[in-house]
Image (cartoon, rainbow, N blue to C red; front, top):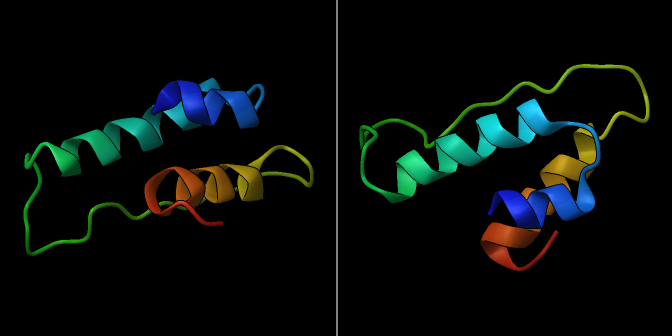
Length: 65
């Protein structure tokens, strides 16, 4: 999963890793089923990849942006 996100999101290794870890925990059943799989707040100036990370994650998980 990280490789697929890294292909589209450049220079945001820490953010990609954090999102990937949360999704892996959820899919492995290591999170509370009564709570959301993840809640993320992406902050930063224009052009750093916030929207692209969200689109890439949606594409990976749901095959659509």
